[in-house]
Length: 252
Image (cartoon, rainbow, N blue to C red; front, side, top):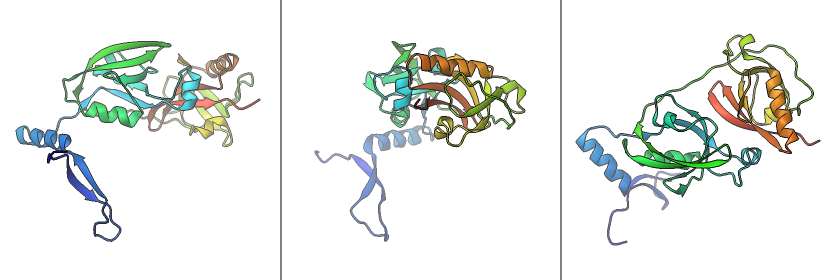
């Protein structure tokens, strides 16, 4: 260092109110950006791409044939956003401006480090093919989507690998909407419960294929199992919004 400011103190770690030598600071580049924004407009702009993402877990990576559990999987590309023009649900974003993405937090922080109107290069995998595109970031807006289904009773085809759920058409379940297959019962000791699935969640697609009836889900599970995969990736609507869940098949 050469006497330059590298950060601004923001907080200290203390159990008594006095300093114990551990402090927290905001990087000088962030301070400069925020100060300039407040001085010239009174508002700190935040860039956004318009995607809902989650980290790629080892089980996800195995189920879709990735070599490593890195990057983020696109849960949803919001309509009318920069992402909607090129990305879609299920894409795996692996790099931002040529640099590997570690996880969802890393991706969000790096997107937020740009300004609205900046162009970024995204590298992603779709249908086992790596692609690259350029996107122009917008100014941050927020929106959420959440639905919840009710419980009922149904049956499950025993031909598919058992993951511990009972299923029914979503359009037959009050409050479940008109798309997908509703989970109406969960074995607390099953594979689905281990991944946080509960009655009321709605399965939208299995292994990238949309489902509308229990037989579609069972067919997707059976297909993945026949390919020698150890689990299957499903897109699920929960009370908190859409997310991807990789459910492992039980050992024979």
